[in-house]
Image 1: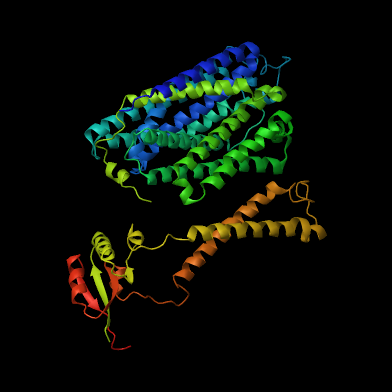
Image 2 (image 1 turned 90 degrees about the horizontal axis):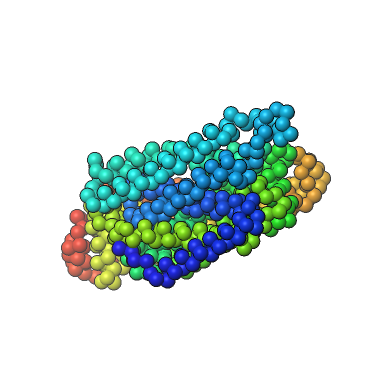
Length: 396
Length: 180
């Protein structure tokens, strides 16, 4: 059983207090910027927690054994999903009530002919981008995701108690995971279009869903790896051997490269074709001085750092090295998350400053508190899982 | 003629692995092991040095990256590009860095091509698998379901035969040295 140490508790609670104070200040100072800050921070942690569900599902359908020892970690991370989804739905409802103006296409009159707000291109998207359908879609994603997360958590615990394959809990887990992955394949893309891409309403990119998924995968694996290293340092997860850490390091490296591949593919094709309606997206990010540095800097953190630091075998087996690389990757993707939202909502007056960082730290605190609390509810030592021995003796 | 070459045949890779460990702990040198498939942990048990393939991959990748960069620089900018400038979609074509995004795929592909092919060639070269190479395995059953361990013994081989039997060898043959 995990026990939250006093310093972890104090740290997470003080981070939450910092987050709350900076949120209050941010909302009083500039509500529009504060909503953007809220939505991008929430997106970041939503990505981490939904990816933990995907990770568990992936291990099930692949009948993978290597990750059995660490499976409590993604199971704990996925308990943050209801909170992140709740905040996302709150943001969506607030947008529909016009409390915030994140989604430009929700402006009143924008789809009515003759209105001064009328926008012909946006009106053409009415079949998909209309308030009711938007809310219904958002609700469907989060309800199914949360339901699958809960089912997988329950099945995992049951499987540990009874053990075995066949018609036992493990095979039930495979069925649930397979359905979840099929649903997630579509819904992750659609959620990316709805919640992120629709901010830049005129613009669209056909690989945007995969781009977002690759980012979720990169930050998801990074977070799982960091928690594993942290728990082992605290004296838990003693069965966790260096080969599992090595494998997780490979995943972090691989998905950092996949993210770069997606990022570059999107950028290069748009840059080359140079069509006005596509290129505006990158014009805002590259030509506006308040985003220009962040745009290249985040790509550097997300690609150059993992490539150099994580390429060799020895570096992926060195815990300190991994911790540094993981924290850099998380910061890089956090900045990139900001760039997904802010240029579309704030245009030329967006600044990544103390208010955003403060709110981000608040989310970190809340995330840590929820995950730590969830880790205390289940024994970290797995007892009867069918692939337990394989995981304990993993050797790469 | 005191040197003898023994071929110990094993039926199972687990037994082979155990036997290798026992022999190595007694500081007996194992010449070679022939196996129908890669046995996990065997290279470690035999005390082989860590493979340097990863280092060659990095070097070949760097060569490929430089080659790709120079190739596209010659074609689009300096050599052919100067005498026959190509206007593709109005993109700037006078400097390398302005056109860099368009060159990334070429450089990436060259990196992969060089690393992949040169690594394969290195692998063949190191294992002496040139065209027309014949098998070095003394027993064709090692391509089916048997594992073979080759040991050179000087002097009396009785002790060695006994040890091999004890560690699980199913049969022990001796190399026919009369023809040499």
